[in-house]
Image 1 (cartoon, rainbow, N blue to C red):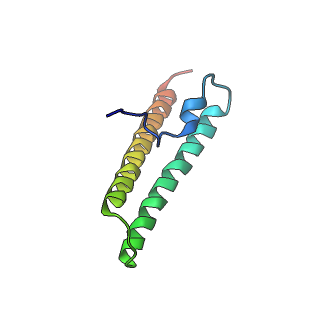
Image 2 (cartoon, rainbow, N blue to C red):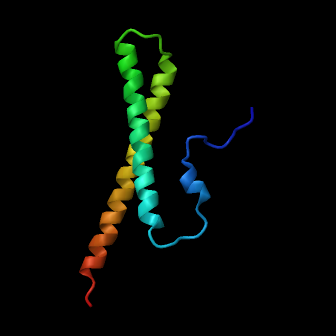
Length: 93
């Protein structure tokens, strides 16, 4: 069995080589939007099941886990950014 790269990794993470001013903020905004899309997709599948539509159970579980992992990653990034900001605020000028 051949293992391929994870196809759900956002392209904006793969395409960045150099960092310019504003790129970090733009990438973070893109990442937040990507996480939101994952959450909405998961919610849509769950609603489809509740409406009685034929949706494979494994697809619901996989999309829910993708959304969960993406949200957890976003929370960790936010925490690291807040820690860095707090460290900067503690510095004396």
